[in-house]
Image (cartoon, rainbow, N blue to C red; front, side, top):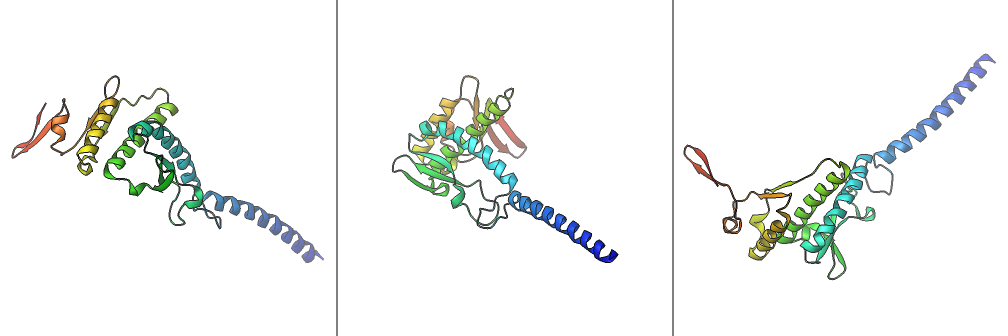
Length: 200
């Protein structure tokens, strides 16, 4: 009788522990993006996606004018996310001209430059919004000009000139010689046998 009573208690305790484990395992699978039939997105990526969406929204407010009302950026919908690796921060492009959606990788060099610039500005806007005492008043761009044709480069310079001035400083770092004629204030770095020389 004692053995039966003890075994009954053990089975009751085991049943409670098993039910608790099932609840914890379910929460763990949700938090780690391991639920069957759902996009593989862990909790960390989910939170990043929430902030990323804010950044994309801020970028689009600038991108409408910068792209000449041609396109906007969209976070890829959960239904269309990949099933491998960390998903959730993928971007698509929504065309305002023909009401269609395409992968961000299909953007031309000029479009990619403008989109990247808009995202950088959007990130600065979100940072200033989240932390009121922080003001992002300096922006340096260190890539992208080499992939631009003349028209796209002129458009990029026009946009950068519009952003510069007032309380914001915009600097570019580039090896593209054509930019030297389009930028008034610049620091030219020249390599010599004795090291690099700077000229204003």
